[in-house]
Each structure stands twice: as structure tokens, then as C-alpha cells.
Image 1 (cartoon, rainbow, N blue to C red):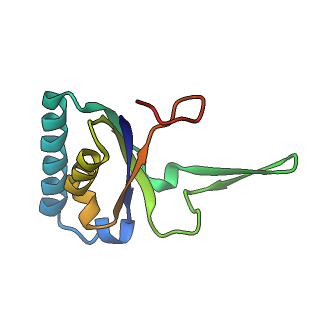
Image 2 (spheres, helix red, strand yellow):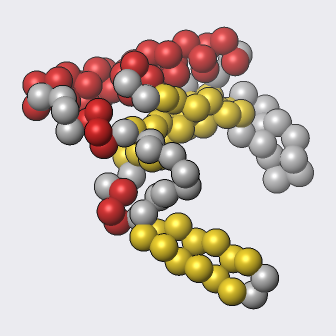
Length: 121
């Protein structure tokens, strides 16, 4: 089963951390990615650009509205994602719990659906 881990961040938390704390989080995430690559569970992932580079698009009727920022009524923003393939939701949850950002904001876990709306196996 394939799972998407959506990694959230809050700039207020991130900017209060020391360089050493941020480096430790990055090293922890790198180690987890390496472990998942070695186990064959890692399918891919990326960090996203800072929120000030984001645009939110809404279309109402025929009128598109483009605004700056990822501001969908939340302090947190989507900071990146990981795509993993695991034997069970329990294993995917274990990976999400291990992701360092889960301690500060949140990691959202979602099963990937196929193009017909069923769960991807």
C-alpha cells in the first residue's frame, strides 16, 4: 500500500529553534530517509519552497482569485511530503511518528488512491 506523509511546519516554531536544533532535525530526517531507502519503502519526497513563494488559487464561478501565501486559515503550512510503500497502515504510522516534524507541528498520513478512486495496492 502506498502512503503520502504530508509534513507541516509553523514558521513561529522553526525560527525559534537554534541552528543546532534545525541541523539535528535535518540529520534525523536524512537518517530516516536512508533507512527507508534501504528497506525499499521510500518512493520519493521533497521539501517545498518557503511560504512566501506560495500562491493559493481559488476559482469561484468563472473568476479565478490568486493570492500570495499558503494561507488556508491555518498557522501551519505544508512544508514537504514523503511517498512510502508499506505492508500496513501500522508501519506507515510508525514512519510518520518517527518524522521529526511530528514533534513540533504535524505529519498527516494519507493512503494513495488509484485513478478509479480505490485504494492503491
